[in-house]
Picture 1 (cartoon, rainbow, N blue to C red):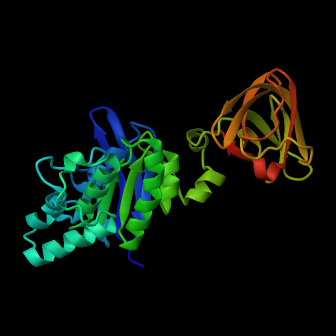
Picture 2: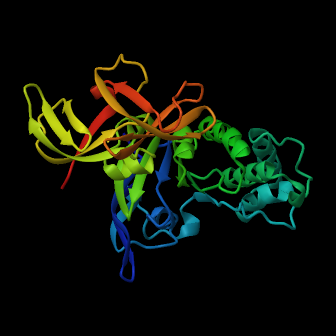
Picture 3: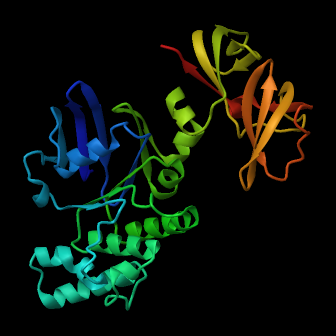
Amino acid sequence: MKWGLALIDIHKSFGALQAVAGISFQVAPGDVLALLGPSGCGKSTVLAIIAGLEYPERGDVTWDGESILDVPSHKRGFGLMFQDYALFPHMNVFDNIAFGLRMARCPDERLNNRVGEMLDLVGLSGTGHRDVNTLSGGEQQRVALARSLAPGPRLLMLDEPLGALDRNLRERLLDELRQILKSVHQTSIYVTHDQEEAFALADRVAVMNAGCLEQLDSPQTIYSRPASTFVARFLGMTNLLDGVAQRGASGSVVETAIGAFSIAGDITGKVTLLLRPDAVRLDKMGSVHLAGKLVGCSFRGGTCQATVEVQGMPLKFDFLANTPLPAPGEAIRISFEPEQALQVFSQA
């Protein structure tokens, strides 16, 4: 099988700062890969290397198996969409979308047809005459996307394109953006620090930390089985308990500050135990029970995040917003199934 884009052991430093340290991944034709991570983790540097705006110290960037490191940026056939859209304020919608086509000396008839196709694709038919300065944020985002897609890039790179939009509009456009990219079979890389955006949009997600790749998997796998404590914390799973694992009668037993827990597998030594916030219940149906005190609740719309103190340690759990919880300061008892709620990370 031929892969479209491949990064092979990419390294890049800026002075004493190692921005990218041995990054490797592939993006299949038609797939959307999200680069997810906090500010300063190296996402933008990776994007700049792919675009040809930066040159790596080691490693290679290939397209269909051929190196493109020596191919100038403007000849790589890649498109880039920025967070601020970078629309030309002196041009109307039509001329903004047509810009790349005119630069490529596209014949007028083909140009007109292509711009019309792009307006239809992004749901802006009949708006070609409009002044871009009169458009809403969502409309500007669509024009920027249409302009990026119009030349038919073999790879489209999107650098936090929804970051400037309000939450409601961002959530609505996420589904539309994925549908548009998939409808034209557009190979894409989407850079974001927002896990919800990455999970909603991408076929695969690459989680980055301090220039390294922590995990590359489907959104479902990353959420259900984070590969490291960093990934777990980044996803908001903060119930991480230091412990010591010893062999038990069946599997292993992990001793922690809040008790001992049996887990599957043959694990020994110092470990970190993750207690997932979304896998506990208030009834007594789970096989493992924990008693504690409710410290407080934080309303999150459809859910409520409860802080529960267990053996002096605050833990956070997610419940449906209509779950009847005791008042802060009162006793609370939770239960869970170990195979659903617990995950062990070895400590190096």
